[in-house]
Image 1 (cartoon, rainbow, N blue to C red):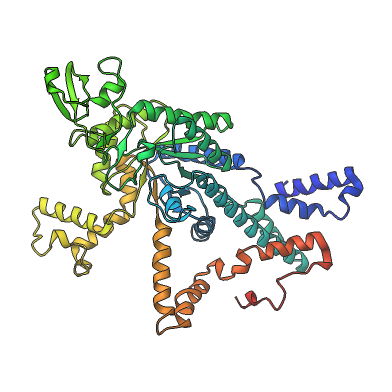
Image 2 (image 1 turned 135 degrees about the horizontal axis):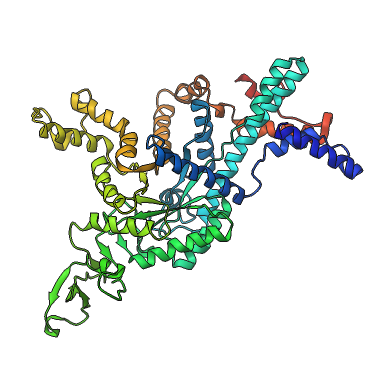
Length: 531
């Protein structure tokens, strides 16, 4: 018996038990409403999606072709439309997630207005967006289910048993739009207690995976900007443990922690690590400090700091800001140490922030990490901060040069130019971009590929195109040709925007509640019937 029919029987039993209290209640309608609202709490969602993500991680370990993907979101509607589109084009949501970007919350969701990615936005906006995303995904479930129920009623009214059975099978095998969200907690928004409190709110809203970075919370910078400052490992591990305790307290025992290191591009630290003996973790962190070895107190100026390192006295270089500088070209070694340490102390996945999308660069670091932790896996930012076209054309240019091919007709510094678009070099570069995710998952241990800010850019691009046409000579044709006609011909559900906003679901409920007296919006005069 299907879940729907079980619920029908259960409500019918309740109606008999409670008698007049269930007067006018149709058991099938009640069962349909239950089916349209499968998830009652954020914790149910967190557990459901954690199970999915753990399964996907195991499948990736068995076969690196089974990587996962997501796109960043800044509004529930955006997330909903992504999943509706995924189901429409691919028939399943498997291995497709959502990413919640702190950058986009700062730029688009703060009450202070647009902000840079420096953790200045309200921390409560993070769990609020998680809840909003899942509200819209659950509504996508309810909307699609409602359409199936209307088809079921139509088949029954027509006495078409075959059609009724076909629709019933779709209802029984319905796949939810609810998928895992990897949620950005930045550097934790304060100390480890602050991190724990925010992580709890995020998990209660539905997050099964929380990404945290090793920057100083009050000095936090976007991963692709300068001036990044990291913390000693002990500080970062305390926050990883805080997130784990939050998962355990709320009963999500298999919640996922993504430990991000910004060390590749971070040349500064705010603190000298505490160390108790040579070779411990604090000593290793301090070993990367840039500075001068001294012989006596005469080498120390007022305000200088001195630490013992490698059996000698080291005077670290201190900037006017009070920050300490790391040795030049130590980033890769620091990344490897960060990643191994995080995986050995509570993290499940890694995030290495890089300055370019280069499979070889990522693989170099991951291979070293896997010498210690063989199943190390990455979440990787396929960032819009990279100039993908220029980067890959330069990579192909360099490969051609190393292979002894003639590259004299190309200007390496100007490869972005449209004049190169149809050349052998550009075509090969596009092929490498197309296969980048599969190549990096196979060769560099990337389990999950995401684009942090895609809809920020698509919204800007589509709005620019519409404004240019609508306010120009095209007038209304700019909207009709550039938007609506494409919506109709591509089968975009939002062309029926009243339906998408819940009008038909509201009509269903009015009929449940008021019967024949229901005043419904979907009659013959509804202009949505034109679509």
